[in-house]
Image (cartoon, rainbow, N blue to C red):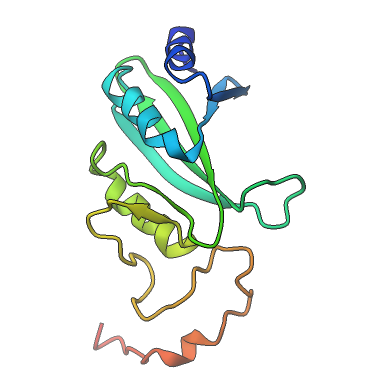
Amino acid sequence: MTDPTTIAALKTTFPELGFSEFRGETRAVAPCAMVFGVLRTLKEKLGFDLLVDVTCVDYLHYRDAKDRFGLVYLLANAETNERITVRTFVSDPEPAVPSVVSLWKGAEWLEREVWDMFGIRFEGHPDLRRILLPEEFTAHPLRKDYPLQGLGERHNFPAITRAES
């Protein structure tokens, strides 16, 4: 649950934010251009010291979806036990958001996973490369337009035996 004073502080500082609540959890929606400022304020002024997760949702073919991808940042304040979800949206052809590695070092691997699976670029990331798939892999398999059977890329990789691994 998020303290009402935290929400009031965010509304005062960022009147463009949209807020909703579901099952006691507060969600803020920030325009992509201001998401870094919102996250920095949450960390530096409001005490949200823990980045729990960064993930993505592909809204391809969703009714009434205006943007292709929704990025989701889950934050927690370890002192007050508050939690908040911050969402922002980006679209093709070059979906990108500012990296938050400068705020939370743990974001480095989380952002790499989102890049690897969805193809969202994190501008300013110190080491944006694949983390789950080989560098030769050219697609992003959690995108909804990626075929269930793949694109035939598995046959392009050398087989590794147990002795070689």
